[in-house]
Each structure stands twice: as C-alpha cells, then as structure tokens.
Length: 188
Image 1 (spheres, rainbow, N blue to C red):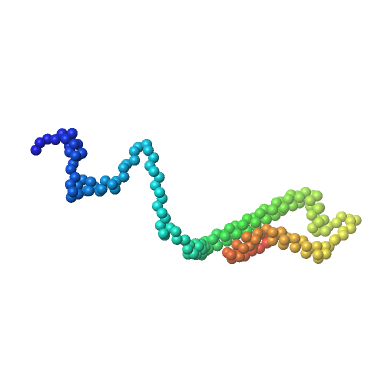
Image 2: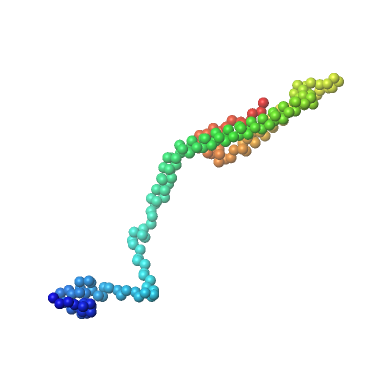
C-alpha cells in the first residue's frame, strides 16, 4: 500500500461518492433534516413557545383547599400539647412576675415606714393614727364611711383588675385551660 498525504485524504473526504443503497448522507440522516448552524455574532430567531399541554389547562380542583385545611388541622392537633405547656409556663411566669413586683412595692412601703418609725415624730404619728392615742386635752372624732363608698372602692379595684387582662388573653386561657390567676394584692 502506498502512502497518502494529508491533501489527498482531505480530497478523498470531499469527493466521497454516494451510493443508491444509502451512502454518506443517508447514513447520517438526510441533509434536509439538518438545520444550518447559526453564525457567531448573529441573533437566533426566537423560538415559539410550545402550546400548553392539556394537563396544564385543567383547574386545581376542590381537593387543594381541603388538603390545606386538613394539613392545618393535623398540625394544630399535633402541636397543641406543646403549645399548651408553653402557654401555661408563660402565664405562670407572668403571674410570678406580678407577685414579685407587688412584693417589691410592699417592701419599699415597709422600708419607708421603718425609717419613719425610727424618729420620735414618726412614733408619735403612728401612735395617733393606728392606735388612737391622744394628748391630754384633745378630742378624737372618728368618721365611719357608709357602705356605698366601700362598695365603690372595691368595684373600682375589680374594674382595674379586669382591664389588666385582654380579650385575646382570656380566649387563650380558655383554649389552653388556664385558670385566671388569683389577686396579686399582698396588702395586710
């Protein structure tokens, strides 16, 4: 066999004969099926969007909202015990915080009374107000309030206590089974 040069090989590729039984173009597919490659730097023609499939046109159906509601109900049912414990703990903490603040206020009041009782004027004032002591020649008049004044004072206290809780908190107390805390008043 003889040697072939690169120019001979290129020429043989270009001039390859086609046969009727399925030559070069028939083996690779017909030349009409191939699209010419786009040149660099030129914009390709925009492709038309494929028409939507029939399944895409079908509405979601009524099962989707039902499935979402069912999922929310199942999540609520699963999380209820943990949420209940968390809410009860936060309510207990809030109650303890209110009691602590009431005790701090009472401590401040008692500290002020102790400081006042350490002076002779404070002792005399306490003896006159709390024990009813008088000096010689003084007359003491005691004014007793009627029942309506005392009732209005307790009504004002209950209104102030009711305003401290909100409607949302009352509903959450009912949902999570938390009883309303007792009065945090620690006055003697």
